[in-house]
Amino acid sequence: MTRRKTWLYFIPYGLWLALFVIAPVALIIYQSFFDLGHHFTISNYSTYFQSATYLKMTLNSVWYAFLITLFTGLISYPTAYFLHQLKHRQFWLLLVILPTWINILLKAYAFIGIFSQAGLANQFLTFIGIGPQQILFTNASFIFVATYIQIPFMILPIFNALDDLNPAFVNASRDLGASNWQTFRRVIFPLTLPGVKAGVQAVFIPSLSLFMLTRLIGGNKVITLGTAIEEHFLTTMNWGMGSTIGVVLIIAMIIVMTLTGDQRPKGGTPR
Amino acid sequence: MKQKLAKVYLILVFIILYAPIIFLIVYSFSQGETMTNYHGFTWRHYQTLFSDSRMLAIVANTLLVALLSSLIATLIGTLGALSINRTTKRVTRESLLTLNNVLMVSPDVIIGASFLIFFTMLKIPLGFGSVLMSHIAFEIPIVVLMVLPRLREMSSSMLDAAQDLGATTRQLLSQVIIPFISPGIFAGFFMALTYSLDDFAVTFFVTGNGFSTLSVEIYSRARQGINLEINALSGVMFLFSLLLVGGYYWIQQASRKRKHRKREVAS
Image (cartoon, rainbow over all chains, first blue to last red):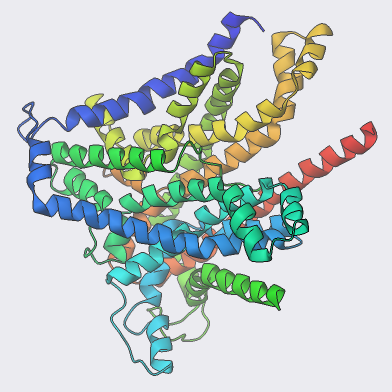
């Protein structure tokens, strides 16, 4: 192939990189330096870092994202592990992926029904004698639904990591007399850690920015960074401040990416 | 014993994963108006859904955006993967990949907000065009990520052989490379389709007033409370997803079988 021809193939992709990757990031940083009157200023940042409300909101958002990631991980790792031992595992994996093909809004909507005053969850609570509770519009319901939505995205990378794991290592460990638990702790888990890290990336960052769940399920009690950005952009039309929070979110994202190492997100398909 | 425990655990997880979906669909057949206490079977909500011309138009919009954007994204993404694969310098390749993954890891709100600024600055009207462009934009990286591994698996001796036998650039691409990476291209296309159908946040930012997709419509209806027409909609969409996933699985299996057969012939 001649060099020149290959460059022609690159043009559409290169245009995309310039227009939809580099330009938008640059624009959001640029916009964060403008106040409501379109003056160039750093007042958005000074407001943000001096306001207790903004800082508390940020911490809260990070805390919730952490909890969601933690619960998702705790549920997903054993699931991926057991799934991987099944006979028709590709088929079962497909069944894990299937719910992600259902529109996320529909899943949220289902929980509005399940968690409502006379809904399924309350019927169950009444049945076991606790009596109906306010479930919808609480922080717990927000975490539950967010975890529910994220589980498949955590299972997939862990499953792929287990798939990449050379069974010879496991056999060697057993032959050398390690117990099941030792094998898991010293061999399997460390070797599948890249999968866990990829999962954390896939779950934590979206959890910082889930905004429709805070509205539909959290009843506006939980304000995440995403909710704040949406509010500033679409309700109060203060794009400067919204962009500033956006920049904070980008920085948070970079921190998470660095902490979880150089893990490229593994695509969510069965091979 | 352990096996049993594992099975019970998996069954529980699957129940949790599927209960909300089944719940939605069951109530789409209920005669009541809310998602509490099943009131007996009816097709009424489906009739309402299929006579709701606004909803049908939105479904058509959503499918159009999904198919069109996935096709274009698959094309651009495959070309992108081809050029990334041809870079010889490690630094260039790494930085291209990093840039490629920016939209993969960026939160939806950031993508939505920055695209909104972008479109507003360029004075591009918000509506079908802006939604389509945004969808293409966030689908390209996943296509690249699906195609690249297949390209890497391709042995260079095969390409050399083709060239030695006198294949032109075009023949090399259409007769050797594309057939070999086609499973990756298909996977990329399906993933792009999923991303598009599942997207809410980005669309919500760049959709403007006149144009709506299913996610945005469901959001605004869900904020008003329970409406069993949405349940009927989820029933239809679930069936649709089943067909899509089934098709995807079938394609994967077929390509795997073909590979096996080839291997058998070779050995």
